[in-house]
Image 1 (cartoon, each protein chain N blue to C red):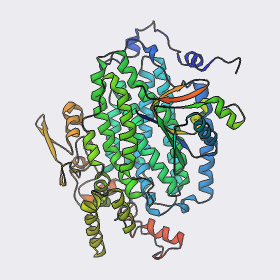
Image 2: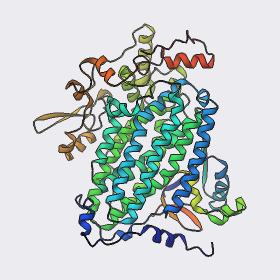
Image 3: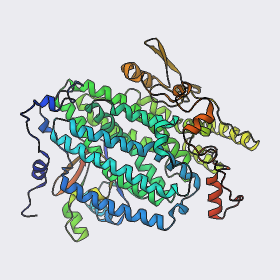
Image 4: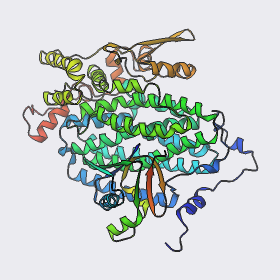
Amino acid sequence: MANRINMRDRYKHMTRLGWETSYQPMEKVFPYDRYEGIKVNDWNEWEDPFRMTMDSYWKYQGEKEKKLYAIMDAFSQSNGHLNISDARYVNALKLFLQGVSPLEYQAHRGFARQGRHFTGEGARVACQMQSLDELRHVQTQVHGMSQYNKFFDGFHEFPWWHDRVWYLSVPKSFFDDANSAGPFEFMVAIGFSFEYVLTNLLFVPFMSGAAYNGDMSTVTFGFSAQSDEARHMTLGLQAMQFMLEQHEDNVPIVQRWIDKWLWRGYKVLSLVSAMMDYMLPESPMSWKEAWEMYFEENGGALFNDLARYGITVPSYAEICAKEKDHLSHQVWGILYNHTAAAAMHTWVPDDAKMNWLSEKYPDTFDKYYRPRFEYWRDQEEAGNRYYSQTLPLVCQTCQIPMGFTEIEDPTLVAYRTTEYSGDKYHFCSDPCMKIFTDEPEKFCQAWMPPQQIFQGNCGGEGLPAVLEHYKFNLGADNMDYAGSPDETNWNKWKGLDGAGDGQVKAS
Amino acid sequence: MSKVFLALQDVDEARPIVEAIRKDNPNAEFDHQPAMIRITADQELIIKRETVSNEIGADWDPQDIQLTLISFGGHVDEDDDYFRIFWQD
């Protein structure tokens, strides 16, 4: 170490590689980081607390990849998919590959763009590294789940589905919104709100849950990705602090973005609430516990810290606090009803699971949700498994079907509506409507799956034509877990009762 | 007072780091969850190069935390000799 310059100097020398342009004025070379109204006095005040430079970046990323691929090879060589707790678990991975992995790719594109367009070279270098990380994440996730694709339905057309299937427009439209925003809003949207505040809820308890359910491959790619995430969180927080410290006029702009993007992210993560509480056969932690630990406790500490800039907790935090007792149950209900048009299986939770849910949600599960599931189970047993045959009304902002209830009355579906330019728009909640009314000219252009289907842009009229357009293998990718080829195969591989004749009934 | 936290993978490489944290942060709490360890403390947590190096018996660079760190809550302050997370008051 004696002859080496210290970390601070190394960081300075290896990231401050920009120059004042002379053939063209700087504002023409970097035209996009001004129109949002964020004022920057001195880009040199940007600093990456990790002080990561490209040489260490390649060294650490190379090491992470070697470890990860060694485990993924071992997983595949030892038929690791047979060691999971139950085949129902695989449906959480289907939702992950369809809904989350393509967002990693979107993040790769978004950070590549900011890595070109920020005037400050410190910010550009950090964004470029994150862009490479995100590409690594989508690649390792696709690779990790390819083993499952060999043995289970519901994986094979994930990029096609991500761009078309109704429930995947929830995560897709979230990222389209971020990628069509300016560079500073993108940093608050993805760098801060999503990476710093919310991804803990996706990657930490869910991946720990993957380990708990015997999925060596997923926990490994999850935690390998998350080791990059720690750096991303720092970048998100740094970007925010940088804006807040550069000029006081930036504070209200940043606050509006925080309010918008924490809510947008929260709605996307409602899918994760169902993954954690319903799709993991063995749940180490409930959604509610994860929310309390990672949003209320850690997020609370963060907002205490940001108070010195005049930043406050979004006013709807109260809604989230009440909704944490309801969210996963309502989302699972929506998925259960619409699973004929989804590339995953659903099921009614068994008694052991319902008892666990009662224990974790003592104030709400037995009162509101257990009776519903028991009714559905009775209907199934009587041969009346219900599949919705109609298109749901979806929220113009978050694009989730309108199934969430009023905070003061969990038996009444929340419904908001407003008009813009002669057309009527519908929302699941006050914050979603507020986001629309702040930027109606943007959100009125959203690609809404039900409307697109009715306009004939998704294969034609009626569910069969739409599902064909989606490229579903009918009866294999969709419908209940009970009676699916996944169930038949699993029982056969594991020598369980009810193995049936082993016939795969794919179309 | 706000709590900071660190989550590390529950792997061999993280053990000397966890031991060093135990020695240098007497008030830290350790929560073992599947495949990970979540460490919380009031206001700040520090990992010192010297302590981890002594645990391993070889030099440890604080940037090596990259290989096992899953998540954290707080601001990061990293230098040649330590890795620290903290909340400002």
